[in-house]
Length: 195
Image (tube, rainbow, N blue to C red; front, side, top):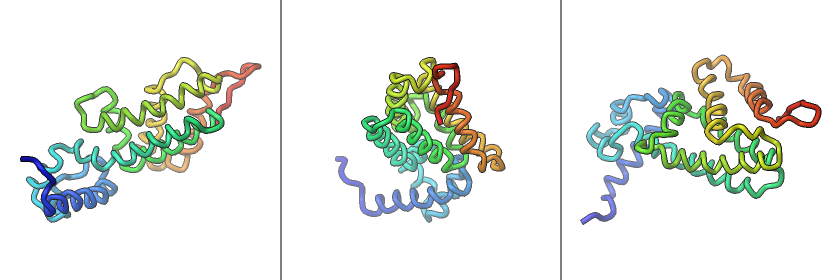
């Protein structure tokens, strides 16, 4: 008979998540699960009962942020300028994708892996952003030859670059502008500029 988890099980799960946020912030998405369990003062078996895989733990840590980004995309879909709505969402996404070292790679790995615990929340976020992209394309702000996967990969790549070369972090905004300019649909006279 399945019911509510026991109070101590709920406390263990919350303590594991609280500690995991800190450890993943320090060590990245490949953080030691043994270290997380030790710092949470639970056995490794307890951690695995709550989170059977690393991806399940990451999904629990990231779901709220992914859901927030999906909701933000939905809210921006009814906003004024499709161009501004898309840029605002992409800046928000790019900032979040750099939250943990290795997150950009983890997100890209789950795009087509329906078995991944990260897939559903990541896919929901990407689909919501895809609607912003389509809206901007419909009014001629973005090239018509890209899709949501292209956009997601390009902006995610910015986070990966600064993850791999932290010395480039101060150039993130400049690199973001370059990517966005490359996505802009040509204006009359052949010039392009989105940012």
